[in-house]
Image 1 (cartoon, helix red, strand yellow):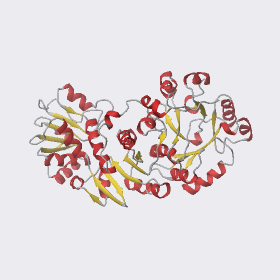
Image 2 (cartoon, helix red, strand yellow):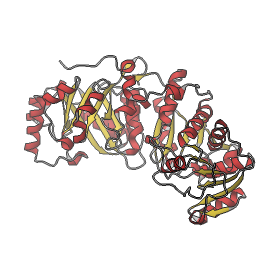
Image 3 (spheres, one colour):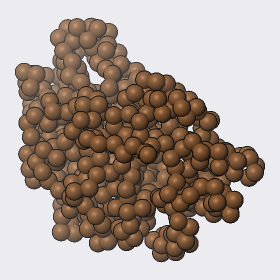
Length: 501
């Protein structure tokens, strides 16, 4: 495994006709070394136009239906398109073994071949045997994409670590494999692929995410990993914040998104990263629906996590797991920063999941009179009984009479409750966030109510999570130092592009 002093080559991938607009390409050109055209998705664009708008190398990829793409043409028509592309592109993707015919190989020289394989989980030994046969055909780059199922696997990272070659990349496909795509360059892969737009197909991160959230193309040395576990953690701001702080402090660590529907399965599959790749997973931020499992899987837990029967931080050290929760700090510190004392306030906490329970417990301990509110009556009653608090079903809930309203559900597109009956001056705080103001924040501000949005809470929680996971305080200027756009990284991180001759 080669780490330190290297730089990954960034390849931007075109997967939609909208990606061919001039503006998206103008933003890509300063960042990416190469541009891959998924011809099965966007057709065959004019290469002269591409070269006018992009100065790096061009790769042609006509992914077949058999290999997870959309091209279903006959073999003769496919081979003709591949050979024609070889006259215009710097590299052509050839699918193993179907495209490796004598005629195609005679027309496309080795230094312009990318030989790819897309298939199901075969395990580490299976990948090594497969690559032995692939490598018999010379190529500039070999790409292996494993389809492991919804829970992912570590066979691709283990393969890269064991192989230790500068001309091979491998990753797990699908949403569960996003972390293997990001980590691949640190394990020896020469390239990282990022979608031109906001989200790519098949679990591909965007080019912007690779640069802004994970610091690519720079590859500082690593000796441990952290991450966020949830159903769709790739959309979280946590990787950007944690990795910015890790780089600022010079810590040899990377914070990755780990999509998973089973926390125990994730912990099991990633255990081999430390043994075989020298990159042990040292801790996780845990989101719904894994917060209760995080507590159940822990050897020890904080008082707050035990009281809420849920945790959102799981530290892994010396074979033991410690659970904690930062939801109380997120809410209490946000209120303090806004000059609001919860003591004596009639408070409604809407949402009885792990976050809602932790917040309700903390607010009660801070002197608030707390009522729990939930859409599911049965779950709400169980949570209220656990907390020793009164409960009101959401369908009959009224904001009237509460001077503090806390929203602790993931609902962002519509208000979970109406504010038309809210008392003047009632404070509205929520834990959910997105790039644009949520529906609840929009309504609160329209009614002139003091509003604390989820981003404010998030920044405080991430600060606490960073301290719990790493043992270091997060630099105070981490949030202020965040770039607003990937282009702000272009000068510092992309000093030189490889231009095809």
